Image 1 (cartoon, rainbow, N blue to C red):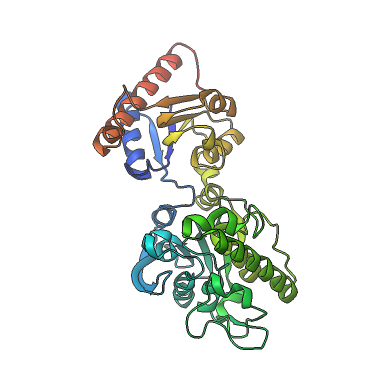
Image 2 (tube, rainbow, N blue to C red; image 1 turned 90 degrees about the horizontal axis):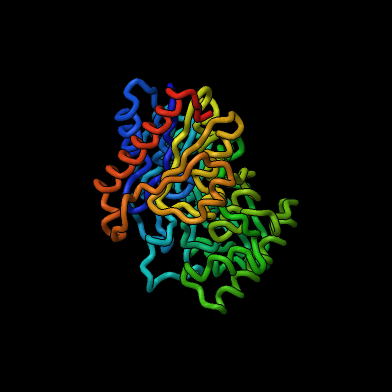
Length: 390
């Protein structure tokens, strides 16, 4: 082996992508000191994507103060690429569910206004390209709070402006009858938005935003029914005002309809998170001429094949006929994983241990290093005896 790519997702609650990757890298060099390794931190578009992209582009964190889902002022940050042109924003950093205490969770009242404030700040710093992760939201306002922070105005059927006392939220969606973008931030007209969106739910209906996600955000059955009806009403208003029918487009129900709001008003492109990340990193160029790719995640099972990091890595590798080995803390459904194309699937856990022990960072790092070292020794033996991992 001459060149090995290491692209491992975080082991959530245990190791970051970079930490897991460095442990694997140490294992490669223990078995094959002369081998070239390229470490690529990765994320599926949820937590951690923003920091991966900041690091990959030589960017920096931008500290800001913005409003939480309940309009409390909080400290947070977003990222700007090294060339200053692209902003990386995780919606959850300011509009996320963990920012709302359990007893106060109510998607009728929460707003995405703070996410709009982050976008506005980046616009005023000169960013015109945006990569936005929209997982983990506390909201079901279809992104109208975000749009309001960017200058959009919304009116009821009597022509009275909505959200003047407090920003747009889920409880006001049914009252929207007119939308005015006259005062929208002028830089939006020359900006491009790409959204990391890993769910395929439509805007409304039985599998739409409200029915699929509102319960975990604090909604009861009555709220869910009201929100779903409001989303259907809003989709009709959007269709009438913009000509865009977002009702059944996959992904528009993501993050309480944030996907639909971004698509309808900011002409955003919705992409699976791992695809977006790999495209941004030019991963297909990075892996060219590689002999092997090591990927992994905390738990591997058939869900791994549904848009998670290892699946995305495998899809890119198959195009260039590069073998991929999957590492994981625990493994289920090996036959499905091998059938999908992974050359091998390996658990890093050497023997039955408690979950607490398995998730100790130092223990997990050593297990990754040991497992990768043994894999590379086996491959080296095969190559010396006239076999090949290719």
